[in-house]
Length: 388
Image (tube, rainbow, N blue to C red):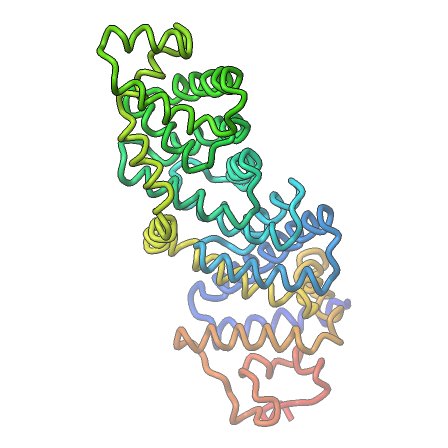
């Protein structure tokens, strides 16, 4: 583009600054547009990652993106972050519907947990537990509810309980017990021993040993329940020998802890089975927190940015950053994109009482007075009243 045109644009931008953008508002608007560009680029990367792992069509991708931003509002996360959770689920072998279900629950897990803050970590926990008990993604909400319900009523935090359940799930599933039964045994043993590594290592060995000893019984939880009926009839000295003969010297302490506190085991099983809505309640608390509100606002801004993807505006931002003034000509056929810029800038200025839409001057265009500058007018092939 010629130097004359460059100078013309410079002069008109200078006029714009003087007339509509006192102080640093233009800089703020440029920063806002820059953030939109960054959001669009991040969204593009997230979608490309999902495409590579899913093979979705353009129409399917659009639907997933819209659902991701909806889930973002519900979970207090950005839509781009939701897409990373969907992709994490898809990469582990779930279909897109299952991946959306798991994304919702793993996002909730991340909100409730003080330390689980990545898609891969949350998905790792959830998948290990689901696979251990051969459950479908629809069961994920039960897992969150149980973990939350127990951690709120017992002396064990959410993350410690999640780590224990993740490590023990495969062994407990192989031992024929339900997720809720495993949670009862895990929680009660931790109540007594206070060391999750000791508990999980001990129960891994305990389940395996009892499964070998009682091959004709499908559910090892039932075996322990029956052993407790015997335990209650024994005196202290007899209990010692009974524990050693049943599970061996190495698991005697853990076995005794479970037998002596079987009521606690059953209470934890009941809690795990009757904690429906506990995770939603905890998630609501997160959404009402400053962190949750900040993420929700970020999601809304990213959602706004994402609407520009199909408008041709992305190329405008990229070209503007690379070739300056010449970029404006590259979107001469993107009327919708320019309308988006005009509406955004005009609306922003109006909301700040620093400018208003000069509709009286441009009745046919019904655009902000920003559009009256000739370098924007030229794309519409007409002049507004004050430039006729």
